[in-house]
Image (cartoon, rainbow, N blue to C red):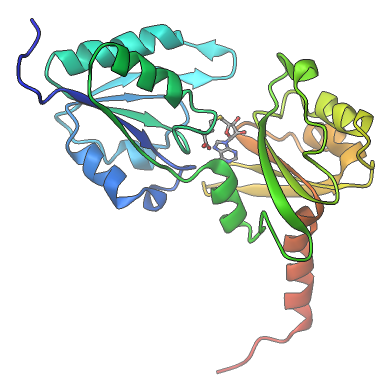
Length: 257
Ligand code: SAH
C-alpha cells in the first residue's frame, strides 16, 4: 500500500568514474540515508561498499548490449519504491545528466508526482583528465571541448562537423566498439589523419591505462592494445600534453631535500 507520508523520494546520485573518494560529500550523505539503492553496472565495488547494510540494492546493469531492465521499467521501479515511502537513491556512473539517462528518470518521477533531486558526479571526462594530467582546455591548444556519444548505432546520423580540429577537444564516450568508424567519420569530415588521439581505459580505477596515437591509427590502436570498456577517446592537441609533460619532467632533475 502507498505510504501517505511525504518521506518517499528519488535522489539521482552521480557516482563519478570509480574512485570512492571522488564522490561529493552530498552523494555520500544521500547514500547513507538510502532505504533502496538502484544502481547500474558501472558503479565500483568501493562505492557499493558505502551503501548502508540495511538498504536494499537493486541492480539494473547497463553495460553495452546487456540491458537487464528497459529504461521505462527503471522509471516505474523508482516511482513504485518512492511511493512505498522509501528514500530511493538512483546511483549512476559519472554524472547522472551526461549520457546517464537521468533526464528520462526525472520525467518519470515528475509525471508520477514523486519528488526528485539530482546530485552531480564527476563525469568520466573530468576524472580521466585530472588523473592523467590531461587538460581538456588549454590556452595554447584548445578553447572548445565537446562530449559526444560514439555508440555504433546511429553514428552515421550524428553531425559532429566542427566539433574536432584545431583549437578543439573532442571527448568520445562509448566509442570503443566503433573506434574504426569514428576515425573514418572524423576524417571524412575533414579532420587531419595526424590529429593526436588518446584512449583512456578505466580512468581513476585500478588498472587505469592511457595509450596515444594519431587519428588514422585509432581503430588499430584499440585492437592492438586490447582496450576494454569503460574507456574514453580524446581527439585533439591536448592528447599530447601528458607525454610532453612527462618528457619535460625527465629532463628536469628532481630537487634533493
Ligand atoms: N554518466 C557517465 C557516462 C555513462 S556512458 C559519466 O558521466 O561519466 C558510459 C561511458 O562512459 C563508457 O562507455 C565510457 O566511455 C565512459 N566511462 C565511464 N567510466 C569511465 C572510466 N572510469 N574510464 C573511462 N571511461 C569511462
